Every structure is written in C-alpha cells, then in structure tokens.
Length: 428
Image 1 (cartoon, one colour):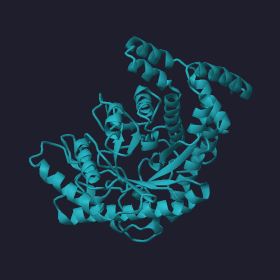
Image 2 (cartoon, rainbow, N blue to C red):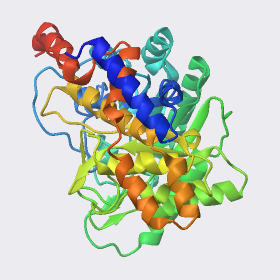
Image 3 (tube, rainbow, N blue to C red):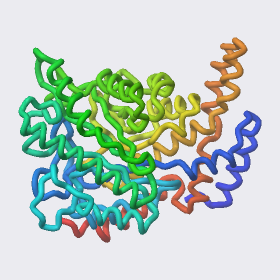
Image 4 (cartoon, rainbow, N blue to C red):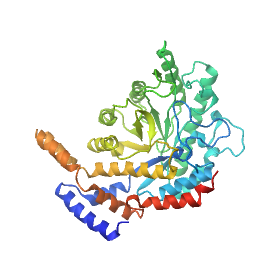
C-alpha cells in the first residue's frame, strides 16, 4: 500500500513536469471525473442472461471458463456490479442486454418485452444516480439458431426479431426518460454464413428493410440514441457477415442525408481484422457522423473479447479521440467476458485499464505535437511523441484514485478477495 502522502508528493512532482509540457494536470483530473464508461453487465454471468427461455451465448459469442461464483439472479448481478463500481474512480453507466429481463414468472418472449421487465434495473440505477444503456439480444434463442435474424428470408423469423428490436427501442427510450439521461440502444446481429454465399445482396437488402422498419419511429434525442454495430466475422459466420462495416457506414450515411442525426455507428475493437486497428477510423468518421459508440475490448487472434488491459491498441484509440478533439462525440463502453477468472476482478481490471488509457490520452501534450507538425518539424514531432510516452502518468492516476476514494494500484484485490470469500463462495 502506498501512503497517501507519498501519492501527493509524487503527483506534485508530476504536475510540475507536465506543466513544463503545457499540460494542466488539475484540469485533466476535473475532466476525468466527468468521463463516463458504460460497464457491460454480461461479464458478471458469462453472457447467460436472466430469461427462463432462450439465454446463453451463441452467434459467434463464447465465454470460456468455469470460475466459481457467477451471478445467477438479477439481485446477485447488481450486487456484483456495485462491488466492482465501488473500486472504480470516476463515473460509470451500466450497459444491459435485453436478455437480462426479469420476467417474474411471466411467460413472454423477446418480441413482447416491455419496460416493466426492466423496472428493477431502472429503480436500482435511479437510486444510485446511474445511467443505463441497452441492447436488443439477437442471439441465444431458437430463432437465432442458424445465424440469421433481421436478414432471415423466413418472414416469421424476421418478423419476430423486428418486433424485438422495436420493443427494445421503446424500453431504451423509457429508460432514458426515467433516468434523465439518453440511453444508447445498440443493435448488433450475428447474421452471416459459414461458407461461401451466393446472394449477399438479398440478405443485406432484407437487413436494410428490417432496420428501416425498426427505426421508423423517432424518439426524442434526450431519451434515446440509436446505434448500429458492424463486425468482420465470427464463429459460424467465417465467410460472410451481413452487417459489415461498409453496410452500416452506408446505412448511417443515408440516414444522415435524410435528416436523421440520432443514429450513430458503433466500432468494436475486436470486430475487425486482427491486424487492423480502429484508431485510424475515428477521425475519418467524425468528419461525417456526429457521434460514435466505441466498444473497448481486446481480441486475441479473433474477436475473443479478452479482458481489457491498457495496451497499445487501447491507448492508440484514446489518443486518436483526444487528437481529434472527439471526447464530446464519443460514447465509451466496455465489452468483454471471461469466465476463467474472478468476474468482478475482470470488470475492475478492464474498466480501470480503459480509464488509464483515457487519462494518458488527456495528459498527452497534443498541442506541442500539432505545432511541430504544422511547422514541418517532423523530427521534433517524433521526438515529442516518444518522450511524452515516458511522462509520469502513473502518479496522476494514483492521485485520481486517491481523490475518488478508491484503492490505489492493485490494492483493490483485497476487497475482491474478501467479497469472494463472503459472497461468491456461497453460490453453487
């Protein structure tokens, strides 16, 4: 454990160093306290969900591992989320999938879900001053068994999923209205094919028409933000994904051209080629799309949704948002699931890593880098980029945690171990 006085002394020294680079650490810390990360609920139960029908991962989604103590009920999941958030600095939101409906014995399928099935989540969030985000769940269901949903040629199956997405948008708008903050409703579908496809246009036309119907009703922007999420491939859809990056770029672009500004594009860090980074896409898209949703994840060789660490990929994304002056245009949400380790530790490690990368980006002396570039001093630019990476960021992070009254460094592990012994060990 680092003594608070040591943390303050290190921060004072770091603040002086950053000031020499033109960076006001106090202003950065004030900004950090307002930055929200939307924590995904599905890390806590391996994407199982709370439904009595369907449920479980599919559609290229897979959580591996059998670590004991996963949440089995909404109350357990909320308690686990609270424990994780108590160890995090800054502000959090909570990101729900529709499969976390609490039906209370009611026999209703996803196409008829209503706000009442999420009232416990709304009441919980309101009591804690949290915002909620939402996602329709188009996997883990008999009607998603062949990896076609909104693009399914069968009218009955496609109708079911259209109705589910329409219901989800209404639920999300009700959540935003109840909590006083816009709810981001993100549509991701598993649609695609394992092998070579003869008529790609057919499935993409069906998806386009399904989305047109789903999004036909406009909700106030202060209640609902709609997002659509692309993907390169997944297990079982290795050869063809209907909702590709190009498809959704075109769809959002058409919507903007038609005057609709409340539909945004989602970039998931694991949804592209393993050697492809989303960082370069951010400035290109922000020129034409008013806002983006970024799912912070860590893919290893494929979209494996490993727990986020503050590696180069995450830091590149945050730096690019900073350099594009885009933090007011970007929603940040985590998206990973690992059942092989303590699930609360996974949340805490992943969200804190995201916040660290975010803080490091805010501390970057971007003005100096841009000045060197604008003057053609490219050697200076490279030198400044390199040297700025070695600035004492960790001292500022520790001060942030101290200010927010959460554990510094790895001290949070003690609280996680205590919760595991007292709470998780009793779950069978």
